[in-house]
Length: 227
Image (tube, rainbow, N blue to C red; front, side, top):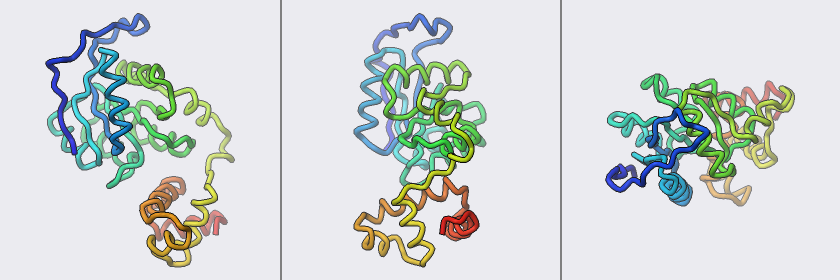
């Protein structure tokens, strides 16, 4: 569900001396499907007084609808959305709205995700475990037209190429069962996890191996010696 936030009761902006050239308040759209995360971000931004959360979208479709009539200074984008990968959505957003500034805000702490988001047009990448100061710093820098990586994301991006592809043990199990022709439901029963978790692992594998679909995922995995 998406909705607009009223601008009538926005606190008076408190200017940060480090960003004197920035015109506050900075307007935002948050694309995130977890209500608890959304609520935490709203509290953080609203208490600062330097930001206006103009809209919230829980899916890629809702995000694109919001962008039809809103032009936020910065769009905060999660990667794991119910209907589309945030990585693919980022490319769609930039294709449709070339001037839109996107800041990835996600839990995915892996180099391949960071690089793909940046390649698809994101201005920055911040992990959700970052401090509130670091998240707001990211928003400010991106709003200024600068690239920004949180400290952990920057360190991950510097890792050597041979460590780039990291498949977790659970992802490896899902991959092998997919290759054997099992469905998400069957895999869930075998691994004692939910079908949604299986699908999340499948989507992560597709992103990591840069596959187009499950069939190409299995082919690439064979070629890389993962099966």
